[in-house]
Amino acid sequence: MWNALMWGAIAGSAVLLGALVAIYFKIPKKIIGWIMAFGTGTLIGAASFELLGDAIEDGGLFATAIGFLVGAVVYTGFDLFISSRGGAHRKRSYYNRAEEGDEQDSSGQNSSSKDKGKSKGGSGLGIFAGTVMDAIPESIMIGASLLTGQGVSAVLVVSIFVSNIPEGLSSTVGMQQSNFSRGKIWGMWIAVLIVSSLASMLGYLFLETLPNEIKAGIGAFAGGGIIAMLCSTMAPEAYEEGGPMVGLIASLGLLVALMLSI
Image 1 (cartoon, helix red, strand yellow):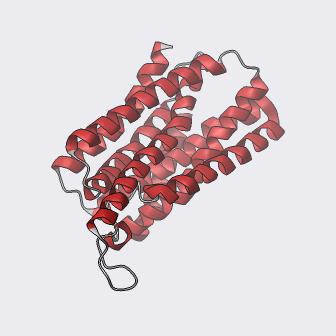
Image 2 (cartoon, one colour; image 1 turned 60 degrees about the horizontal axis):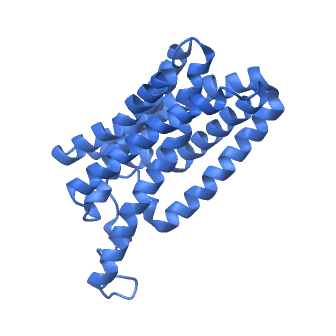
Image 3 (spheres, helix red, strand yellow; image 1 turned 45 degrees about the vertical axis):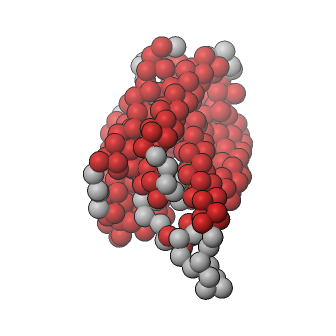
């Protein structure tokens, strides 16, 4: 149980690392995109080799397919809701500020300061809520990986850690643009770290008592959510920031995940 808590905290701590870099250094947009692309590749590998592969082996194709589709649908539904509340750009480090109310509106008039404040505050809270939503299925599966008795899944921990760095970095810049103080930003990321740790521990405790078919379905559910997240947020935004090189870098990330899974 405590190992699950520790590994969840290690994977979640990457958002703090990303936030630290964002607050004290200016990272080129292209580099952020490349890091995000590498994290995308490793997470695709982790979801495929660890979550879906194990799910098929333990529970069969039917349980895996149902869990995977439900996970993708549920994540997409929550993503639509979070995006409508200002969290659509949680993985972007540079927005079009017109989307945040800093430019003139479509009628050519400037937004009022009151409306700007609402937009900015909503965006910051949406970023935070979206990041928590991304972290939960990843962390649950870190804890679940310990149930094999062979130690934690290295490919899951590395993949999640790498993908969390650009998320913490780019989301922090987004929060700064939403006029969040450093103290509030640090408080939010510490909350994400706590959620990641607890989700990993609960994944270990909860899944330990379940039959293999249910475990398989839950693992596939997390895999579906992760793949939906990668396709809707990380992959397109990595390309937007990093350019055509992200395809090669994501492929390298997938190769690293394959090597770690052997």
